[in-house]
Length: 188
Picture 1 (tube, rainbow, N blue to C red):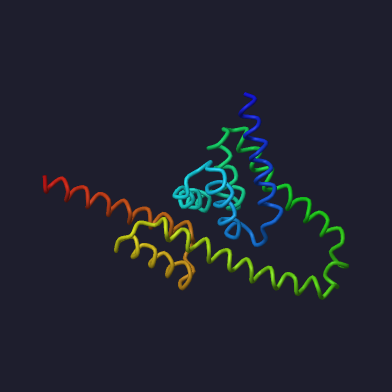
Picture 2 (cartoon, rainbow, N blue to C red):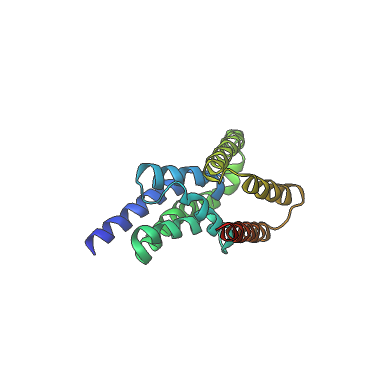
């Protein structure tokens, strides 16, 4: 019990840090979450980041909160998921409360405008890095590359709902797996 409490407290602190210092939303948090929970602490495997992202994207709610909840549960059960979720949410709640209070005065500063312009550029770099890391974990075969390419085209070019693309990608992967396993069975 005491060990689980320590893990849950550590989850809260790690996700509080992630929530406090990552701008740009869920996708910008992916490389930070990967670094903190997989690379530094070994709570999850690097390869699991893709699964966490897929589950977080396909369930209702923000990716950052869903990811924190999922990782927290894997590390320390229900209490861990609650603590990780609180950790990732509280910084935004505190910051937005302060900003809301001073909103009109805050927007008047040109330095704030330029700071956010720089933050957006940095967030884009983080998202590109996360995509690169996820591609490394993706299977290296023609079918996987085809599914990734189709998913990219459907979401970016045709603006198809991400949930539909994830379901479609899963179906394509399952069909490929079934066909491959059937062929292997016939060869024996």
